[in-house]
Amino acid sequence: MWLVIVFGLTVALVMRFYMMPGMNSSQQILWLLPVLMIALIRPLHQLAIPDRFFALFTTGNWVRASFLYLFTWLALSFALVNPPIADIAAPHLAGAIDIASNEGIAESELDGVLYEIRFYNESIPVILGLAVRDNVDAQNSTINLTIHRLPAMEMVVSVSGRVSDIAGSGPSETFNSVDPNDWVRGMKKNSLTGDTTGPMVAPHSDDVSMAWDLCSDGCSPGKFLIHISLAEENGMIPWQDGENTWEGEYTLSLVQV
Image 1 (cartoon, rainbow, N blue to C red):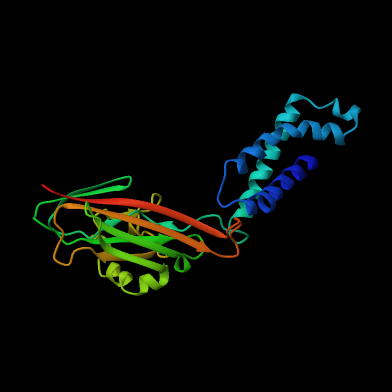
Image 2: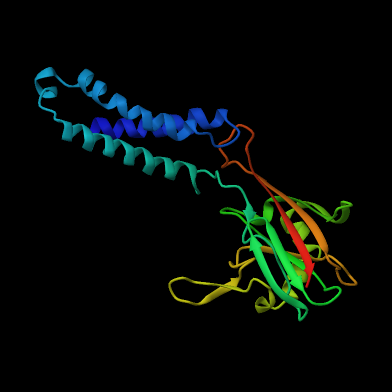
């Protein structure tokens, strides 16, 4: 038993402090190699245990030893790559994108990266909202956001810098000017208690929420391309470049009905 536990701990430490610092992102080898090393459990015992005791081991012993190794490796791996020891999770959007509701909207649908808004009037005001989330410090993440109007790729919004600085320069105030109940996608509910935690686009209090008014005089039918890239750098990141990155792209489609 102790041989298996030590083997699992050794594999986890080697993967964390030898393999990961030589990579720039998560790779398949980080889980595939440890799983394949289950095949070494029997040979290790054969080397370490006298033959008269090794002969007593049955198939059941090897199956149990394999599971003990697997869960030992998994448990330590999770501890070694998550706060407060390390951080491999990149900042990301808390709940995709959303727009502030208004009377002209007939219906809406978010399908993956396509957010379609169908409305009655010739134009509608569009306040686009999003929020940044991170498991360590979303405020100090770096954001690069561009919003273009299609098909001419007309620049509508272009911001780049630290999330806290961007949010504090006006977008956070714009987001907070919208009542939490007035976002088109509605509120998020706790699945256990049924209580609402916040709007779907920014359900948690630690999310850094921001919003932009895309058309001061109202938006006519058309499409907007929203591109967001997020990054963070800190001493807890185990990758070679010391950076966690995330990138996403959404299309906001405005359709008159």
